[in-house]
Length: 365
Ligand SMILES: NC(=O)c1ccc[n+]([C@@H]2O[C@H](COP(=O)([O-])OP(=O)(O)OC[C@H]3O[C@@H](n4cnc5c(N)ncnc54)[C@H](O)[C@@H]3O)[C@@H](O)[C@H]2O)c1
Ligand SMILES: [Zn+2]
Image (tube, rainbow, N blue to C red; front, top):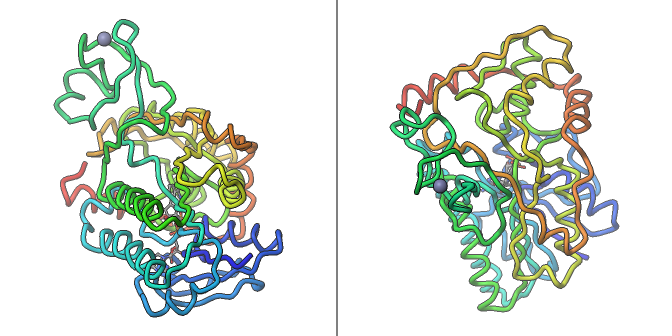
């Protein structure tokens, strides 16, 4: 099949490209190389046609798209906290970029399958359950609530302790950042126009994706890569809150499989799927595991500070994607070891302190 991968030079896109090439598809990449500072990454698959270009370039899209049967739309600006003070560039790249892609599809009157890299960040907090009052979906926490009740969200009725439970796709969207709002825009507009013009759309809501090729020098995205970079450089991993907040880490290989299934399965059309491991990992455990991998006796520094907008827990309910035959295969330890091996030969510049200062300066911690 003739396939386009936008953002195909990035972390997730490049792995999708490799798999598509392996399966014998004819792949074109459009990427403006912003995430690699204008450099073509050495892992770029030579069997794919690479176009240095921007998804906001309507003319380019209208040249490339005819006969394209499947589009994997991965091009976006990523970085949750950063998006809250770089509002304009995030909205411009993620919303306008997606709008141009949709415009090109409509102008050309084509009906490709459009697979969108959506995000769990649109849920904001995950679902929780109170023993007495059942399930609830809390708002984003405020500093005042944290001062009163501690870091974990409490039941809105009895203010008692609650526990996180898996978050299914029907959960209302409760965005916690400008980045999340741009991903919500992508989800909703693509699905809406897909139904209107009858081109199939699949929304894959990735949770915390991790794996080789994730930037080790971008301090804004990918907590596992950020910790790797800190530890590799002999710096203590710095943890916000008390470190007992959890994330759902899903291996890049499982994410690629979800994309391939989304492409193949007709029953995936016009649906949204969580793509997560379904397993909570505390940030403390993640940091400890990475220190152990590097055999470095570093101290995990707990700041006890709340980074405004951060969620406490959000774990995927993967019932729906399992019904179309997907299941996660790579566990956190195996996946971290893989990044560790890959990172041995990679430059990892630790910009975390600079990013942390930036957040302080903007009043976000
Ligand atoms: N990494 C995660 O954990 C995660 C989780 C949920 C969703 N996502 C989504 O997955 C997608 C891929 O993310 P990633 O982690 O691989 O990020 P990445 O930064 O590694 O890849 C994005 C790629 O898109 C390119 N790009 C950005 N804007 C572009 C534009 N206007 N035109 C052309 N190319 C452009 C960048 O140069 C980069 O190569 C994004 O849409 C992101 O929102 C990622
Ligand atoms: Zn209660």
